[in-house]
Length: 271
Image 1 (cartoon, helix red, strand yellow):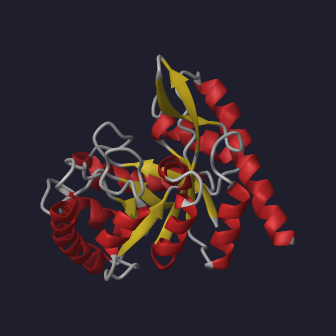
Image 2 (cartoon, helix red, strand yellow):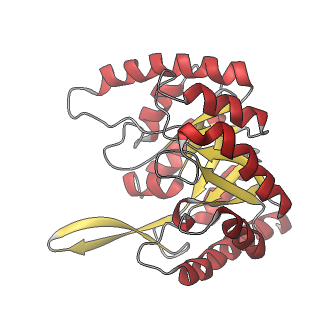
Image 3 (cartoon, one colour):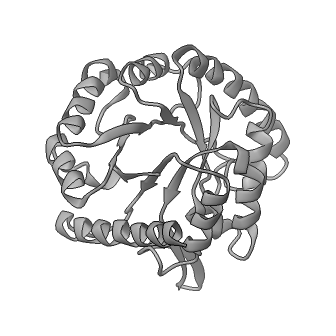
């Protein structure tokens, strides 16, 4: 399993400095943002992505995946992103999100997204990459793993795969929903995100907020035991999406999160 540092929270740093930070912490590679507001804008991908990969390689880091906002094969720069990623040896492209439109729309939305994924799969096939769909809690269409399965079932998981996020899955199904979610998506899992959540009551309403790994809802050892059972060997993107921290504080917390994951993986290897 390759442990990657997600770039989102480090974007105030120049790319070279981000590479140096990730390497100094001991990450295997990076999960680079290639989307509006990301390290690389979609319209700049052909020029800047190859150079970014070179920078990471110079620091001993791999770039097995990028995070995009693509939800349609026909949107501007979608093909350029797939093509350039492939040329750079990047295997996995995280897609964007389809927002759930509300009660009564679910089945029609599932059908619509499946049609779009057929067209996206043709890009994956053409360029030899895997587009992955992320489980994200809330009003995202892929919040519930069973809905995710209904969307991606019958697709070739090496072209349209699942990007599971046990943190978001635990928010939606904290007792056993995350577990059944991993069960139903097991054959499709190609990428895993790592972050943890807790529920907090504020002004009379409950809100899910990101907390340090091991302090939230997710039973991480059990998650990694299951990943071992299903033979998962793909990228693990550690997200470190902590708000309100300075870069120095963020780096310190990222180090703790990386060590937390490594300890679990080491214990599983030894058992």
